[in-house]
Length: 82
Image (cartoon, rainbow, N blue to C red; front, side):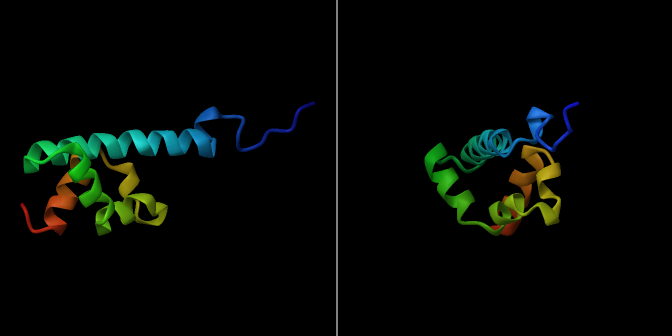
């Protein structure tokens, strides 16, 4: 009999989790690009330099549970652009 482990659910795999986070960050960057009128690459750079991005990666903050638009709002508030 096979013993269950934490990776029996493919969505819990660290590789899949990283892919999902990358996809989310891309979506957040596109939203910031639209809001700020800058290129998606510049938006990505600004986002990765922010406290909001650090909080998104820190599971203890719970920010990862919120939607991309909410995270974009948090970034805008952090930067005083809201």
